[in-house]
Length: 592
Image (cartoon, rainbow, N blue to C red):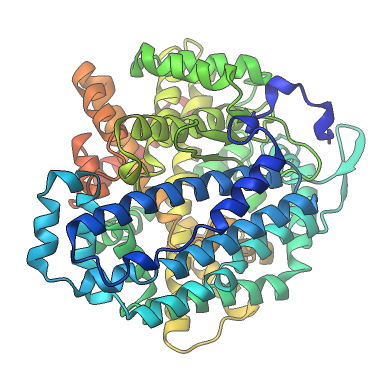
C-alpha cells in the first residue's frame, strides 16, 4: 500500500481551502471556544428581535463549528494513526458539547411559547430562513424536555458519541488483518483488497480472503459486541429521555419522516424475497457450484468482460455517462476534479470506504479509496452525486436551510449510479457486455435495496430486544442476523458462521436507522431515472428543484417535487418490478 507522500498531489484533496494551516485551525478553534455564551438570549426568546439575533448568531457559530469539524476529520482520515488530528477531532467534539450545553435553553424555551406566537413567526418574512425549523419546533413540543434535562443530555453527548469513534479505531487502525498472497506477491489484507478479491474469478482466493477477513473481526467479536450494545443502549436512553415509544420512532421523527415510509419498505421487500431467492438460485446454476457461499455472491457471472480503468479515465467516463443531467452538471463534475475536492488513493492508515463531506461557503469534499474496478467507477458517480446535491442545496438555500435531511442523502448519489448504468446498457452493442451490465444492476439492487433493508431489519430487531429488556450478546446478535439473512437469501446459499457475524463489521450501525435510507434512496432513484429518461427536460428540471431544496421542507415533500411519493406503495412496487424485469431479461440472455 502506498504512503501518502507518494500520491500525485492532484489526487489529494485541498484542505487548505478550509484553513490554510493547522495554526489557523487552532486559532479559530480557540476563538470559537471562547465565544460560546448565549446566556444573554435566555428568557428573552418571546421577543422577535431578540430571537432573530439569537438565530443569526447561532448560524455563525455552527457554520464555524462545521468548518472546524470537517477540517479536523479530513486531516484525521488521511492517516488515522496520526495522534495530532485525532486530538483535533476530539477537540471539536469537546467544543460541540459546550455549544450544545450553551444553547440547551433554546428548545425548552421555544416549546414554552404559545403556538400562536410560533405560527406567527413562520409567516414573518424576517424569519423566512427559519420557517421550517420553527414548524418542526411546533411538532416537537411533546418531545422537548426541561432546560436542566437538556443540559444534562448536552453534557453527556461527548461520552455518548464515543461508540462510533471506538468502532472506527477498531476498523481502521487496530483490526488484525492478516497477510495474504495476491497476484503472486505477499501483502497485508485491507478493506479495499478484500473487495477486489471478492469480485475476482479465483474462488479459492475468495474463500481464503473471506475466512481471513472475518477471522480478524471474530477475534474482536466480544469487544465489538460490547461496543455495539453500548450504542444501542445509548439510543434507548435518548428515546426515553425525549418521550418516544421506540428508537425507530425517535429516528424517524428527527428526519420528519412518517413511519408509513419505513413500513412500505419492509413490506415491499419482504413480499418480494422470492425474486431474490430466484436470483441466488440462478447464480448457483450459472457458476455450476454444488454449494454456493457468501464469498460467491460478488463473483462475476459473465466471462470475457473486464471494465478496469485508471482513475482519471474513469472520471471522464462518469462525466460522459451522466449527460442526461445536462452540461451544467457535467461542468460541475469537472470542477470538482480539477479544483481538488477529491482524495483518491488508498494509502496506509487512511480511513477505508468513501464519503462526501460538506463545507458551507467552500465546497464539498470526497474521500475515495479508488481501485480500478467497475464498482469503484460507480463509487465516483455515487460520491459526486452527494457532493453536487450539497452544492445545489448550498447555492440555492440560506445556511439555515442548506443541509438536507439524511433521509434524502442517498437519492442523488444513487440517481447517478442508475443513470450511469442505464447509459452503459444503452451503448452496449456486445451481448456479453449487456449480460455483464444487467448482472451488475441486479447486484447493485441486491446490495443497495435488499441488503440495506436486511440491515434495517437487523437494527430494528436489535433495538427492540434492548427496549424489551433483553441484553445483546455475540450469540443472540449472530442468531438475529442469521435468521434475517435466511429469509432474504433463501436456501440456495450456505449460511455459515462467518456470515452470521457480518453485522459486526458494518460501520453504519453506529448511526442507527441510517441504512434503510440507502434502500429508500435507490427506490426513489429508480423512479426518478425512469422519469428523466422517458420525460426528458421537464423531469430534469423537477429533479434539480429537489436537489436545490436543502431542508426548506420535509424530505418526503421534497421528493414529490421530483415526482416520487414514498407515502404510497407505488414507487416501492415500481422498484421491485424493475428488479424482477431486469432478472427476467438477464435470464433470457443467459438462457436459464
